[in-house]
Image: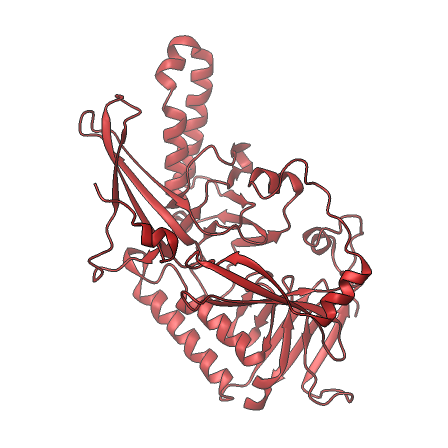
Amino acid sequence: MSAISEEKVRGGNMFKDISADDEESHPTEIESLCMNCYQNGTTRLLLTKIPFFKEIIISSFSCPHCSWSNTEIQSAGRIQDLGVCYTLKVESKQDLNREVVKADSATTRIPELDFEIPAFTQKGCLSTIEGLLDRAVAGLEQDQPVRRATAPEVADQIDTFIEKLKKLKGLEEEFTLVIDDPSGNSFVENPVAPQKDESLTVHRYKRTVQQDTQLGLRTEDDLEEEEQPASDLDTMRNEVLMFSINCPECNAPSSTNMKLVQIPHFKEVIIMASNCDECGHRTNEVKSGGATEELGTKITLHITDASDMTRDLLKSETCSISIPELEFELGMAALGGKFTTLEGLLNDIKELIVSKNPFLCGDSSSADRVEKLKLFGEKIDKITSGEMDVHIVLDDPAGNSYLQNVYAPDPDPEMTVEKYTRTFEQNEELGLNDMKTEGYHE
């Protein structure tokens, strides 16, 4: 039986990328009790990393006495800042083959059948839509022999419902699959990336106090936050604050610096940056220092020269990005809040869509998909070098995003800034449910 070394626990990176060339990377084997025959079997644990899902723990149990086996996946990474809800309209066989990362904190629903799998009732898994349906059927069938003996009417009702689930795999009717994960660690594949997926809606949201409590982020007694005194805010404006964290990549002790910064011709923002001395991982994040604006903001820049790449840019968590010429759209919160340049934003988009795409390697990859994303990356490179004439659109319903006007205080001939009234759905995403539905200002 192998064990996790003390060196790894105290400072090294326990989570490594899967590689056939890494001879030292092997599962940890633990003798454990079989819950089927109650004799000893073997559990194998592999600590690894995959993009989008951060660190994961893959576990596999097998019993040599009764041949019972079980596999599961658990997230070992940090809980994301926002929850995420995926709504997929399943219309074709290709949709059933979409790959899914489902964390154990996710709730799965099929509204057409009034069917729901609550959070924490199933272990996390890496599967497909069809695999999720098979898992639901297997869970319902598990106790059917006992029900037929003790409650035959209930067993008949469950048999009827199981048949409805099996018919979904045949796509006799279209249906909707909803995966709602307050931890933000679930993921549903977009097979047409980097283009917008018309069948898939991704909604990121702020967790409720109850969801934070369920995830262990709050105690029941810690439900109210104290307002910060004005004197403390004055101190924050003049100093760089530092507080300790664990690195999200290698889990080693690290620190985050925080500073209030006033952006010219805009507003005050909070910039948070961290740099891990152990693995070199760097992050920077921007939070709005003010409240949600009365109107949303839509900024459109016509990129005509490579010098546009040096423009300062503030992207809030609520800002979505689109490049019409590439038929590309990135939803809010996908890249988090950033204070960077236009070139930095485009490089982050390329890294997210191409370099960190979890479905470009192994059995899940396809030549067409790899070629399509490679071509998208080449187009991004052409934009940053000024070889491609495109428009970039920053749409922020909270009104907290900004793109530098290099002609200030005069108008920028290549940039338009449109203020608009939010829709009811946008107010709901921002937690402003008391506001009424309105259309865009002309």
